[in-house]
Length: 122
Image (cartoon, rainbow, N blue to C red; front, side, top):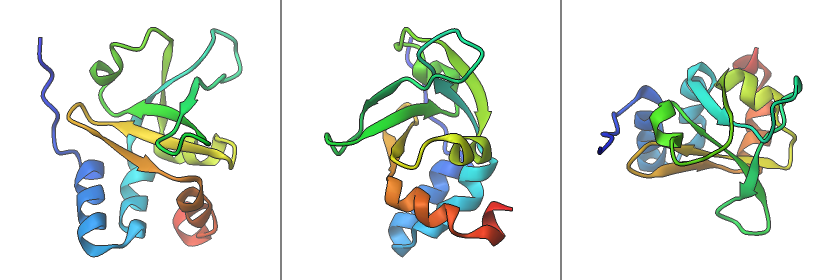
């Protein structure tokens, strides 16, 4: 069964961000997005399942707006908002967002920049 990726507001924001060369363009949609995040265990604390990021010297957490895009990953998934994700992951962790027809990547430097924008993180 093939899963068709939809052009979500977040995916559209990434496209516009690349066209405009302005990563800030994704922040409002990133914070509003409803994700499923892969976790490593069944404990009460969120134990993020970390994998190598596109930069192999770094680690990232894998998320998707559609649970079906994570179907091939045999670890638990939990729902989380983008705002919760950005606020809760450690500063050295990056994010890979699966879309079904590809992925987008948010680096730790970009996340640090976002976290330093109190008017947008409020």
